[in-house]
Amino acid sequence: MPRLIRQALFALAVLFVPALAQAQLNIQIVEGNPSALPIAVVPFAFEGAGLPPETDVAQVVASDFNRCGQFRALPRQDVVEYPVRGNEVKFGTWRVLKQDFLVIGRIRDAEGGAYRVEFELFDVAKQQSLLALAVGARAGNLRDAAHQIADLVYEKILGVRGAFWTRIAYITSTGTGKNIQYALMVADSDGFNPQTVVRSREPLLSPAWSPDSRRLAYVSFERGNSSIYIQELATGQRQVVSSNRGINGAPAFSPDGAQLALTLSMSGNPEIYTMDLGSRRTTQLTRHFSIDTEPQWMPDGRSIVFTSDRAGKPQIYQMPASGGEPQRLTFQGEYNARATVAYDGKKFAMAQGSGNVYRIAIMDRSLGGSGEFRTLSPGNLDESPSFAPNASMVLYAAREGSRGVLYAVSADGRVRQRLVLADGDVREPAWSPFRQR
Amino acid sequence: MNNTVRVLLAAAIAVSLAACAKKVKEEPVETVDRTETTETTPVETDGKYGPEDLDSDSCLRQRVVYFDFDRSDIRGEAQQILACHAKYLQDRASAAVTLEGHADERGTREYNLGLGERRGNAVSGALQANGGSAGQISVVSYGEERPTCADSDESCWQQNRRVEIVYTAK
Image (cartoon, rainbow over all chains, first blue to last red; front, side, top):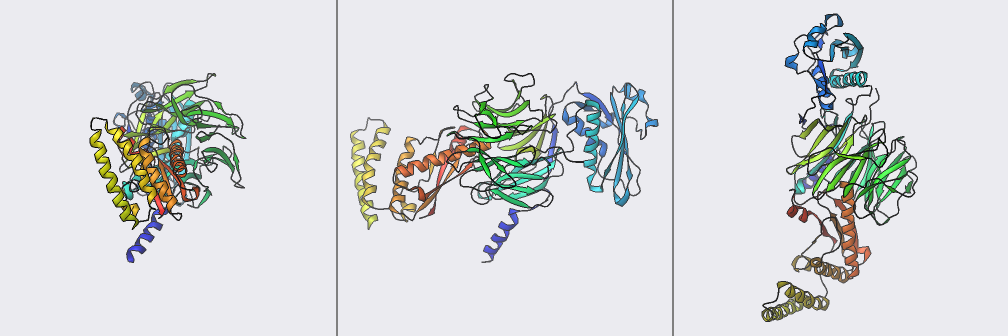
């Protein structure tokens, strides 16, 4: 009897545990890019009262630069001077160290126990200040402030909005057999600050961000069959939006957030549908005996790309978001599936299979035509690519031995960073859209 | 009672099979298997299955059907297993099964959900063709999410490409 009660309580407890921190992702830079822009980030001075914060803001900024592939931060031990304000900068020093750019800063107290992080960016060759701004942060949020600073510097130098202050969602599984535990997690884009969104003893998969990055849609088997849930991250509140007979899978928010594309097999085999999230009414877009799944919206919201094996093997197709005749997009590679589209609507990342080897391929249609393919990952079972919202990097899942790990790779493939959960399997990364400042 | 009859018949068949096997000693093993398949069928139709057979009957105890990579057609070896489960469903109208479809880890997860369902549907079709009725059968696909084996090699992948027959009512 007490055992039954215990089991019941446990079942309740595992279903939903919001915001519980888990083992941190371990970050390693696998390769580097020698032609990246050299930038020095001087440790930020703490000018507040009380004890200095634990977060090393300059280190977080430097790590962001190193990860993205376009910059190479000067190693901390090579930083020989510690200017805090513009008039303390000796440009000659940084020129000798062959740095193109220099970031300095200081952390000051703000009202209500918050901080104000002031920073300045310099062009070393021109001996010019390019940017001088301040970012506010609460005590526990200094990493957020650091990512925002990295974004502002990135945008000032490269003319493209930075995507460091974003988040990633992913699925973990720990244990084996009957003791397996699945979790949907959300972490900062660098893998820090992981939070549990949902935990379950039944499979969880296919997390997808809403365009305002406040909600996640995902698939859960907790009802015995696949169902699609939408969950508000701030409140933990969630709703079942689809629980039909058969598969309820592959949710994807439309760019305006009003619709969900999804896969349902209630008609007998998997077809693509759209759901109006206001009325919950669904519209069937494909009608074919093949497997049609993994819908993704084009950035303009007018068409949908998806996976179909109507030609025998899975390939990527595109069709109007209102339905209509699909056009095949991929003609290279025997197996192409689960495409994701960059914000420009020109670059597609997908899992490309050849024999027993599955790698991330980029199909780039920037130059028109049917597009050029290149392979972005070196693994054997790589899948689930997800673009950063500025397309500077791609997250994907790989297998190493019998465990799943995540990689973040720069768009040129030159810098790869491994994110490994200390325990268990990590997979299905989904990079969030830009966050609203 | 039924049981006794079946056991006796099975014993008789076993003896005749043994005799048969002796006669065709030089033949490949496959031939013997085929003989066995055709000769056991009449035994099953003689008596009706009861719930206890799920634990004791050597055919009904087999609950997993395996598939080739990216395929959902039923292999020859599975026909006999499916025939006895179909007969069970026919004999016991109150019985019900859930067919859990699975895929190996290769390929994408949502596509594999589709593939697992396709395999489940293939098994469902075979059960119905052999006497089961649609109302007794439900299909759920877990794709590659519930592997029985975690290594990345063919022996492991083969174990994971499967449909599990789960009795939800006996």
